[in-house]
Amino acid sequence: MARKVVYDFERPLVELEEKLEELKKFSADKQVDVTDGIDVLQKRIATTRKDVYTNLTPWQRVQLARHPDRPYTLDYLQRICTDFIELKGDRRYADDEAMLGGFAKIDGRPVMIIGQQKGRNLKENVRRNFGCVHPEGYRKALRLMKLADKAGVPIITFIDTPGAYPGIASEERHIGEAIAVNLQEMFRLRVPIVSIVIGEGGSGGALGIGIGNRLLLMDNAYYSVITPEGCAAILWKDDAAKERAAEALKLTSYDLLKNGIIDEIIPEPEGGAHQDMDAAADLVKTAILEQLDQLTGKDAEVLKTERYRKFREIGVYCENGETVGNHKG
Image 1: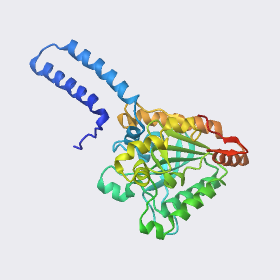
Image 2: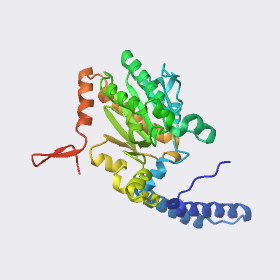
Image 3: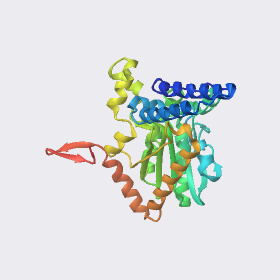
Image 4: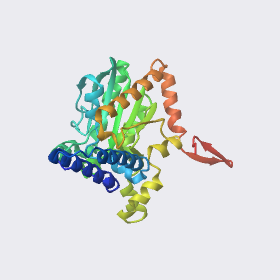
């Protein structure tokens, strides 16, 4: 049985839950009524859980975004989609299993699902390259997007990567060019695109499938130009500065919504999406359908124009002494 991952900030809650289990076992073994004690502990656990998960630091949210039990793209597909047909290969080099996609239906609506996929164990992570996509993965994604565009089917992308694969083989096959082409071509697609960061949204690796009409983040996901560790190494030359970096990067869903980078936060079950995958999937499905209701039926030129303006308006700059941009802070 796999060991349960517990982060330092969760330890007070886990210790209380262990005491509760011990008390229940004692009650059952000794046939002693300890109902009052159990009630007190349960109330204390509820209070502690609320206090822990409503006061998370940016770094703690990054940790939850990386939780090994967190639902990945396939977990959501299995829960919210029917008739999924996976389509493989970029028709140029190979099939990158860190990126998957294909046609599916959500409540009877045809969609093209594309997403980054991590593994649950070492063998799966080697197969999925730890969610770090090679150039052929981005070329496969673009091939599927263009196929959806021809079919007039909305595109849903699930983003979950610390970044594109930075190895020599990836550079030899032109990872920067592959991502750049995706950015360019996604602006030209005539169908609605909804992008959801379900875990990690790191750098160009995330942006390569993230040019959508709507960008949504799970409550405990993050979206950033660089990981906190990478930022700490560059700016402070010290991995111990990763918590400081996470704070400075403003990478949480709440910071991103405040600054006009994302359109909506998808709530998670208390303690993170891994605590209840079914409930998390229901929340994601509801958000997708709401966005499709808003986007479906819009003229293709309107969709392209809105998508273009969305990204052009991100950020703040000064022009003739006036602040320009969509910053809401």
